[in-house]
Amino acid sequence: MLAHERCLSSRNSGTARPESVPDATSAKDAVTASSATGDIAREFQCLLQDGIRVCAIERDRWKSKLRHIFVLLIVTVLIVSIACAALMTSVAFVFFGTAQVLADALGGKVWLGYLLTGTFGILGAATFLLLAVSWWNRNAFRQTQLRYEGTVVCKANADSEREFLDAGASLARAQFRNRTTSVKDAVVKSALAHPIATAAIAGGAGVFLARTFVPQHETEIPQKDPAAAQSQQHLPIAPLIEILTKLLGV
Image 1 (cartoon, one colour):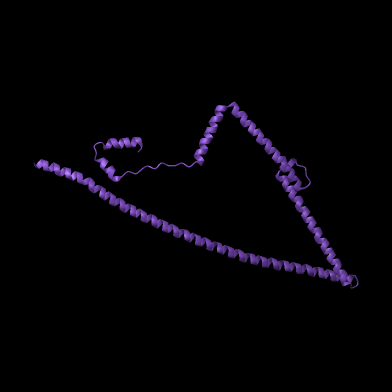
Image 2: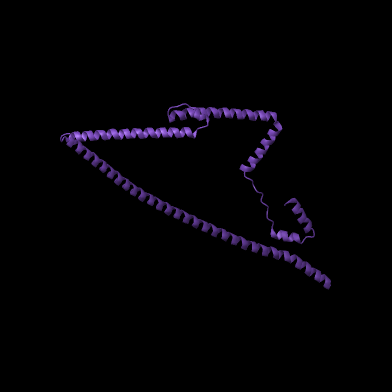
C-alpha cells in the first residue's frame, strides 16, 4: 500500500513538473520580448535624435561655408575693382602726359596730341592682343600634338588644332572599328576551334556573374519552442531524435 502511494505521488510530481516549466519559460520569454522591444524603441529614438542632430549641424556648416564664400567674393570684387581703377588711372595719367608732351612738341595743339596718343595706344593694345592669342594657339596646338605623339592621331595633317583634332578623331574611330572587327573574328575563330573550352569558360563566367550580381538569400533556421525541446529531453528516444535532427539539418 505504501509503495502504491509512493508510485502515485511520483507520477503526480512527474506530470506536474512539465506544467510549471512552460509557465516559467513563457513568463521569461515575455520579459525578454518586452525588454528587447524596449531596447529597440530606445535605439530608434536615439537614431532619430542622431539624424536630427546631423541634419542640423550640416545645415549650420553649409550656412557658415556660404557666408564665408560670400564675404570672400565681396572682398575679392572690391580688391579687383580697386586694382582695375588704379591701373586705369595710371594708364590715363600716362596717356595724358604723353598727349601734353606731343602737344607742346607740335606747337601747342592739344587736340592733335590727344589724337595721336589715343591712336597709338589702341594700335599697340590690338597688336599685343593679336600676338598673345597667336602664341596661345600655337602653344596649345604643339601641346596637343605632343599628347598624341606615337598614335594613329599624329598621322593627321593639319595647320590648326581644330583641324588636327577633327582628322585625328576620324582616324581613331576608324582604328577602333577595325580593332573591334578583328577581336570579334578572333573570338569566333577560337570558339569554333575549341568549342568545349569555350563552353566551359562561358559557364564559369556565367556562374561568377550570377554569384557577384544576384543577391544570395540566406535560409533562416526556425527556432524551436523551449517547452517542446525540454519535454523531448525527458523522452527515452531523445538522443535518437537529436542525432536525426543534426543529420537532417532541421
